[in-house]
Amino acid sequence: MVRRSRGREVVLQLLYQSDQNPGFSNDDALQFLKRRLQNPDLEAWAGDLYWGTMKHRAQIDQMLAEVAENWSVARMAVVDRNILRLAAFELLHQAETPAKVVIDEAVELAKRYGSVDSSAFVNGILDRLANQRGAIEPPAPEVEPNA
Image 1 (cartoon, rainbow, N blue to C red):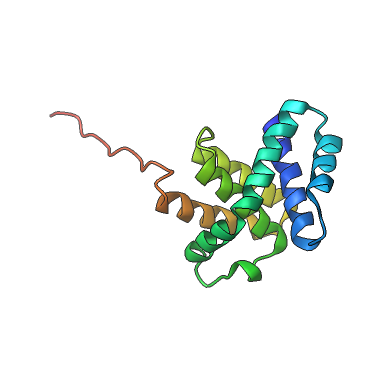
Image 2: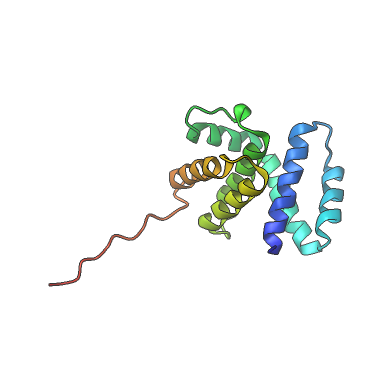
């Protein structure tokens, strides 16, 4: 597994724990990162994703609710909701990672940890969010050859 993919997987696990356990502390998160990743650079990168997502969670949830037709964030499956939060943070605040990579990584997490329908759900929501925010460039128009 690619290092950053592994970092995203661990961040998803942290977000899940935080979502289900309000007493989950920053110290708990830090220890979890160290135990699971065992690489200072990757720990720092994953920590930035986790704490950034947590810091902007209310804003991210509002944006997700706006693009999720007929779904409130609270009604979403816990795994799906946290994959979406993580990917939305990365789309909105981590410009060095291309939007297509963020979406692909989120879809892979959904396939691995979500339900049968999770990957399509996550893909659809993130595609709408990315397009709304201009993070994905539209395909270039086809140029007709000169006759």
